[in-house]
Image 1 (cartoon, rainbow, N blue to C red):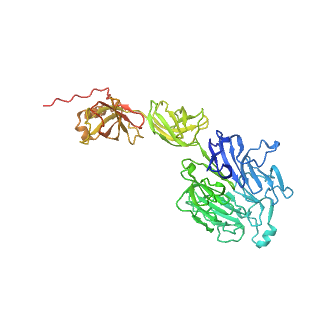
Image 2: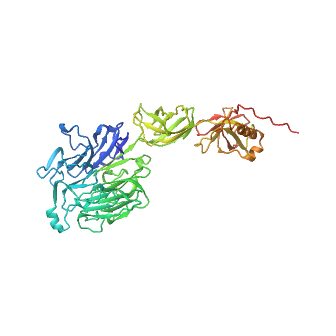
Length: 587
């Protein structure tokens, strides 16, 4: 999501919504920029502009007065404790710490407000994670530190010279952060913690695991606990692993290309493999590619490459957002938001929250004339009615000025409408939307601005009511063919208003030489254009050809109107400042 954040809709599921609701919008944050989502066990929140913590669940702490200037940008939740990371890379902890999970030393076993962990000289932390009763943090240099409960080996602190029982005795609990020596020669990128195990992702794209393995959550083929991190997945250099996530006793790993692997406990289908058989080795989910994956409790969620939200596993409390409490053994799109672009998710034990930013999916039409005035409709998600709704047209070419227009929101269709402004130059412009008039979307869809070509020749002045001879009408135009006009449209408008207009699709192309040779007017026009090449080397001509329709009306006069975007129609008026040659009289 990035530190800048975005406006949009924050949704919630499970025990946070009323019975009968699948998903529900969390209105208190509407209009604010959401920077990140945090969640786990029984807590969840959104990090919003101003570095405020917008709790979706009841707050689990209040910052003490001397710490109001601390900017917390990441939180991780354990069963009874919470870990916070400040912008300057310092660690804070609060809650219960009987197993050392606070990292504040053996003398402090609980604290209601955040307390700063002792600084480690020269280290700045960049990410954090919590298991049930253990904690972990990664530094900016890729060093991994862990602390708390280690009775199952989840911290990765052990001696290869000790037996399992000796390691439990000698290394069972750590009250302060300690470097994981197994990664002295490997840079860690991220760590995810399950209840009693840990999954580590290295910079090289490999996946390691340590801790409890009773139901296969280590992915190493054994049910025994593992005190030293061992390799679970070797990343492919062409497609390394890029993300990892843990639930209570299952794990997920995602490659850079979007391939998803799962292993561990699977009683509720949380592995997404369409069954309830636990896996002791990683297994790839077939058929879907994801760009983000998440896990919590006994369920999982993923965002597809198209930005659609999928959820699977334990459906109790309705947390999957599918409108029921049944378990789902394979990834299933959350149809309440199936047309919504979702950017991030946070999974707690009995609910899920997810964020849909203001997002431009596509526009109609995709092009328009420099003179402006085109009625533009914008399709997407994360929109709502606001007095400050603004659409901006940002030139792709540097050095040109952006244009903006006030817009309106149609609640019935969920679309935004505006009148395209006048442009000084043709070209490509990215369409961006700001719900508050200030913070614009960043995924601009292109709107192409063109110079309207001039019509200089129409092949027919009269047409039969019924097109029984397959008449093809040709219009010759001078100017650059609009690049976005893949399927231009011609509308025949009867002067008698009792009859409706008739629409036909045309085809743009070059004026055939053979056709020009048989058409004195067209030939003369092209010759004139050729003669003036020295004066205007960029002047071009092209042809618009379309079938003559069958008219459902009595004999009447009609006006042909052409459109290159399907919205703005211009009547066919022959205009050429140079006189057309006269046809020589027949014999």
